[in-house]
Length: 258
Image 1 (spheres, rainbow, N blue to C red):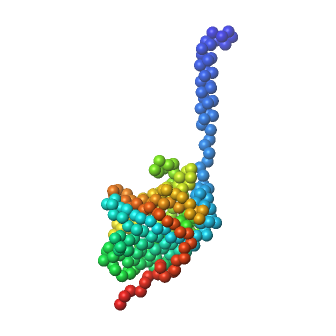
Image 2: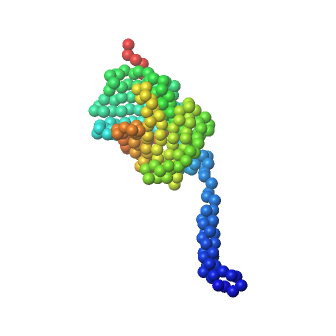
Image 3: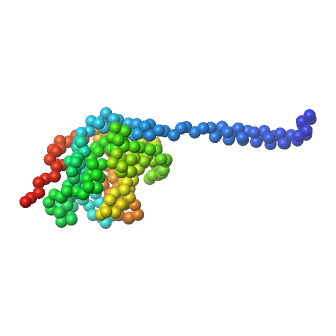
């Protein structure tokens, strides 16, 4: 016992050790850094893609590549986008081409695989989807000016990467979730709900193999899959052309044959 203190010396060492552990735990439990705001995340995302100035300079875009399905079928695909809101998709299989397009107001298709050899107007829900696809820079860029709403709803692991999960409510009322890599701010995945033959289907679209064209970051691998279904569509983008000359007539519905 230490004289004058009335307590065995080993008790003092025990109390000292306990005090040190408590201090250490308090130090390690220091307040964590505040979560970033949506504005911070989107600003970093825009910067990672190449910056607002470069993104806004894109007036038209042409992406060309090939797509394969789980069944091993392959198609040559072309996506063309032009401001404001014009978009055109082409799918060619064994020399037969299907076209889905919108001039920013009206949508149409030519689908030989469904026995539609001439142009036909797209249904209302398909037109709405085409208008979303016609946003050449993506909905997160200038989202406030576009009338969208963005909310940070948490973080999740996507493909082995820690990702911010953003809830994006478009001006139209459509809701999707965007997942951005916490480190690189690259888009990893987008979740949305689409109407397929009148049925709501959850769609997951993942993005990978990024590289820059004209100083702007683009994914060169896009995989689309319906949740709960084994089939997927895998698109490899072979070439990207920024600001190609695209005639407005490519997006307008051609006259039907009498």
